[in-house]
Image 1 (cartoon, rainbow, N blue to C red):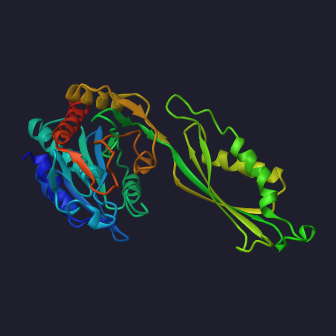
Image 2: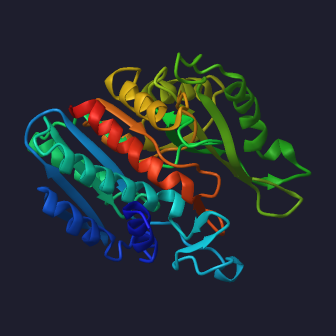
Image 3: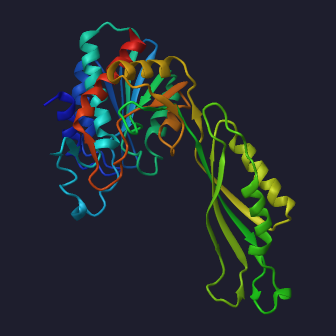
Length: 375
């Protein structure tokens, strides 16, 4: 059994359902400390975070990831215990196998091999690991990033081990993610009997033209890396449940998935301008869960694409699709951030798994990336 597979199985066996770490990071410290890493645990709000660094020079290459996993769902639907690593048909099954305990194991073993082969390498290597990625993400990576910023520690490159591959290992690198901004719009009217509309004001009717304009609005045209910004309604609620009552207010939940072609402030201003133009009596509460980030082609993207090509023969594509990740926090203190990991078809599902044939090549890609950046 390879070192990477053995470590992956050890981590899967620890039932670290978010925000629990269940000793995963302690295991990583046991492996990193003998390599010369200074390891620091930063705990907050029931969340365990690890910051480990080897060296003091620049450039600093950081591996980032999370030890927490999503809940299993109905355990009786799993073919085998989700926290007992199991092999079937050339696959390793267990919660976290794809998202993202294999990536963490591969990063650690890749670093071990690299340091043993090149003990005097230039620059530094870091690990930023949290147990709060699958949860609210309020006491995890963002806390560590804030602490590093206050200390003046400069990150140069960061590889996040999220499962990004599609049909083949190495076919996709995420070099950015869209931002996510939600709005809760409350349009006020006057409740009344539906037979006497002249004595009421229907907020649904009043909001409809403004909503139609918001749906039709072209927010931006995207750019070379991003598709255009999307505005979507997720929920509309109005009324008392009775069929003869005009509602007194309507509540509309919506979300922007926005690119670096727009700013959160600019989008908010444009929404308010449309609502004001329709003379609505409204209130609007904004929530931003993540800002967009982008790493254009350059040293890190080139290093990852070359590592993937050398190991698998695959020409990796750069992509900014998908939801948010902890990369949004790291990008605030690191100019080049990418995400790369194993195929993602089974993540968060019953019988989550990874193909055994992908495990050591994944480790080798991470090691080659270190070689490309630090040798």
